[in-house]
Image 1: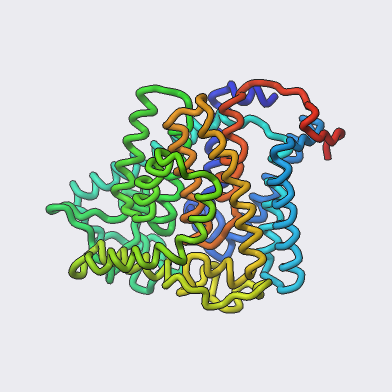
Image 2: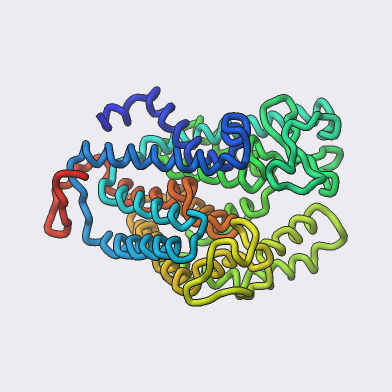
Length: 442
């Protein structure tokens, strides 16, 4: 059945669309605002999506008839179990508004997926093409706006009030041509090239960072896909040009640094995982302040740098303990303002939680860095993996402080499972002495 699904182009398209919606629903106003009635109902979508993924994982487990724990995956399985247990106990002791329970459930899903290892490689090309279509929509909307209004969006009616999504009181969402949204803010400077006003595209998300994060994932899928074609090159172009119209600085940093990290072969899993947790404290605050000092007078770039400085903070830990505290006790909402990129993680889950997650993250990136030594993975795929990994780091760990959600789950499973598929795709392996087999399914 799974093989028939992977060879049917129509089913491939529907599965890819479903997965795209699944990992982007909390960033997609088409789903959260227009289908489910607004921000307050996101938790309902999360529960529905989680149970749906859980159902399909159990179904695939029953179809396969066994769980296989490979020897080289036992370290990852161990830390996954320990981290899930820590989150569960943290919820029971501190009452974290079910956030820690959510993290435990996602870690459980990761362990199940790691044990059944179905090949889902067939969806990557289609996901990349879907992202390319979104890119063309973003490009068309910008060009049409330039022709009709020279990029001025002040005359369009408000489609969604910004206050409904926690935006500044001076900001609202407008929908020129009905094919995507723009956030219109009275206090934000425009980015002008000649007489062309570039409004930061968000497609149907709530802010440019969200739109950029989704397109970074689909762009990675396109690079990871082994298919070489004219259509693939066209969609790569549409992705890159759409990033220009979205103008998310985080996306530019990811696209710039990822190829450099790939070419710097001395960077391995240990160095990378250490750097990710050291950089927000020792490197990024100083670096951003330097760029602010040379940015000049008030302009779009300075405005974005000041926003980045607010997110990054000064690198200090203002509130931390051994085991942390109840979720939201020392900050309002998922992201802890003015506490740095790791503030939410350290204040809520303490030093123990940070160290356990650090260990999990190291085990997570090991398969990807090990695959870089294998000749069957080409440079395009290596860069695609690195963009995917950096997207998880920048958005899930740093900016949004939501380390486990559907968006992160897709990236994590890809980084764990796909490198092995690229090496031994379509090969059926019998259980060996290096595997522990649990027969009978679940």
